[in-house]
Length: 318
Image 1 (tube, one colour):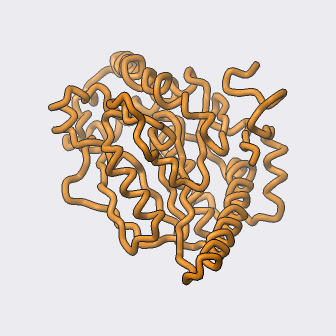
Image 2: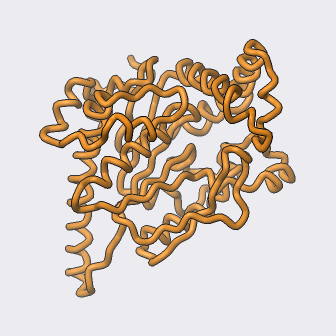
């Protein structure tokens, strides 16, 4: 049995090989150029236009159909209640491990979905901004658990998605700097009633804040219309993380303003060992204990192979 989930026998999912999934693109046009795609792809990731055509165009077509059907359902409900039709954003959650490529997935989907004529305004929010500031994490002894459920202000995140889904005119989300490795005090990203909101992060499918024994009454995922989990073998993800760390050591870490500037002086061997250690002690544990267990809650799972290409798609049965 495939450890990442089988589709034979009793399963909540329908499975598609890459070629099967590609055919579901139908006549959906490729609206991204090579230059535009390059600006969307993360460090050390390889995503070709063929990958977009084979994986992301069928997904954008599916989501376009779901958005239209959901908008019709909202109108029906408003008609039943005898009230004016309200604009309710369609909300998509994207989850997965550090270094698995979920941010790239989110950016590509945002670009493709924004090119459909009936929902041109698509906003992308990352949950990094809802991490507690480093000063709070340090005071609570959580700096080595940054990215774990308890390192997030889950209440603020739930309030944000509830306000967006409730049709609030403007909702502000805190912003995060990967250079400073901290929340940016006073800086906000404002969401103004878009057609679609994509929320991307490690924790969007989790059902616990990692602190209280009693689960919260509301989860972030309660407000999503559709959820995606970007999956891969943990050994592959660790290798991608190490490769990205080595690239950052030669680029971003050399900036004296970088929180990780101290790593710029490491030799290649030292940098590899440091990256593996960080993975073993932090990111790997978070994946096993908190992130991967949420995979089966997703509506759709993108399963990547060793080269970052999606090899199989699992779509949950309605």
